[in-house]
Image 1 (cartoon, rainbow, N blue to C red):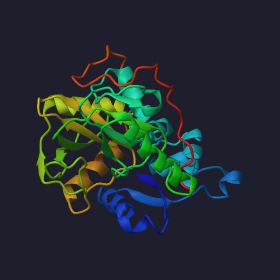
Image 2 (tube, rainbow, N blue to C red; image 1 turned 90 degrees about the vertical axis):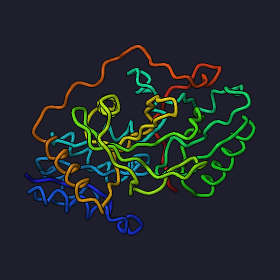
Image 3 (cartoon, one colour; image 1 turned 180 degrees about the vertical axis):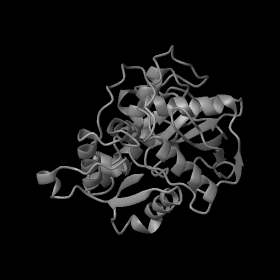
Length: 318
């Protein structure tokens, strides 16, 4: 099987090792892997190639800026190539506001979330909320805030940094704070899930760290089903999804990552990811999760005005 891996070769990203990890894992399963970082000028005359599968490792900031990697996978999809993650999946998973809207429509449980711009009173008096940007991965710029004034002050620093050429954050999201949860990463398709990888997090800290996992186990049927539904509702493919397991046992969809980093020190993880990717080239994509009655959480309702429509991301880096 011939696989085209579309991934940036920018000097700031190459040292992460994810490109080499993808190539190694796919080749170990017998695939022939070609690598591409941008749309070649020759395609304008001769058209895109016809690989068996395109793995588009398109970063959030590249989606937001319609960067060369996204241009290439868009051309390949229009030409009929089989994409591991369709363009719609890349777009929807890159913007956390869009992701939340899609999951709400599918009835998936998630922390209550709203665009800060639509909120005019504090949703949960006496308790903090999580403030996070709609763009950005790696838990960047996420923190707890205790009032609308504090949240808007933090957002102002984001906009000032953006105006100075810094990383663009997209909408400022205010989200229910789930205290001391277990955060679980699963790699999933609409029909299969990997082992459950619990992320490391020190007591009292809000975000997790790293892609090496202190506890690995078989997911419960409920956890595996939620992971599959998270992927299917976003258009299918193979995503790295994060699920919060609250102390009261609730399972909450937190995040989906189309470009995900897997643990390059764990050969079993690489094998699972590569086999799931190659299997995607041989089966029809299942239907997305149907619209279900929304699943409520025990967290606060966020916002008091009609929420703004989810929008496509703006450019992300100056």
